[in-house]
Structures are given as structure tokens and as C-alpha cells.
Image (tube, rainbow, N blue to C red; front, side, top):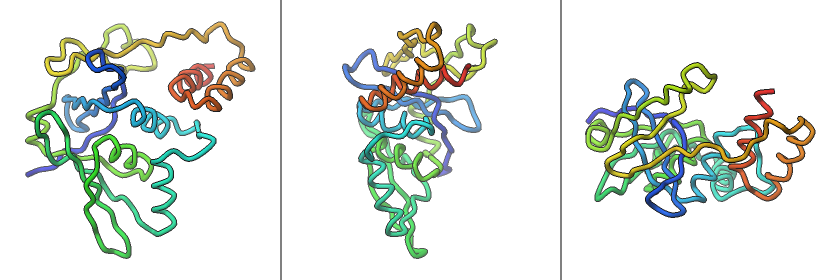
Length: 204
């Protein structure tokens, strides 16, 4: 079976499962998306890894795993989403130490959080993408803006997920106020809020 490389399109709040999020993976050489429902903690961990400039005051679980692996010269080479059963995705970490390769079973959300920290590529098999891949509509309102990759999730048959628009408005804040709010958000470990503030600072 042929492997298909994926990258991360974004994370959105699940309207059908309270407290859950949808991680949307994008086919690198195609238009299909693979939505995977994940928990709030995993969504936060992935968001932190995506936002390189935000560092938690203490290492999260996936950061601890990365530090542990670095200390013992273990490298995650790639992640493969290899099975889909009853709506649940199964993944493997392909690891290497002393030129010996090992395959470790992992939840898909954990595997992707670690893949980001190791800069490891993410793959799935073509038959899984054929079965679970969907086409999402691009929001036409954002085509003229910097963020042309933002996605409007519309009429998803399986998960009925929607991308939430940011509720906070930081445009009226000064840079000093934004930096203060950013420090406060990181201290409170509200990394979703911190990422939004960082985006506003970057726009300035």
C-alpha cells in the first residue's frame, strides 16, 4: 500500500462532541483533508508545538517525552496513521536508536504532537485517505487576506465540525498591552489565547 504524506491544516472546536477538537490534516499532494477528533489537552499540546514562540513555564507531557528521547538518543523518524476502525485512527511512531528501528503504537493525537516536536513527517495509507478523506471548502472571504489557508468546514457528513472564529478582539490594544496579555496567558497556560495574541503582535 502506498503512503500519502500529510501536513497540519489547523485545529477547530468540535460542535458535536463537548470538550473535543478536530485536528485537520491536509494531503500534501492533493486537496483532501483528514479530520481527526482529539481531546483538549492534545489539541493544546499540538497548538503549542505549532506556535514556536510560545514556551510553557514547565514541560508538558509531550515535551517531557522529547527531552527523555533526546537524552537517550532516540529519534522519531516518522508517524504513520496505519488503521481506521469504527471511526478510530491508529498510529505508529517509527523510532530509531543506534541505527536500530523500532515501531511503537500510539494514539494519533499523541503521535502527531510528538511528530511536531521531532520535525518528523506524518503519513497515512492511500486506502485510509480514500475512506475517510474529505474535501473542505475554502472560505472565499479570506482569499484576499494573508491567511489564505484558513478553512471553512461546511456540511461534514461524519463529524459536522466548524471552525470557530476568534472571539477576542485585540486590535484596540497597544503593543505593550499585548505583550503583557501574552505573558499572562502563558503563565495561566491558556495557550490558545496566547497564540491569538501572538498572531496580533505579528501583524503589527
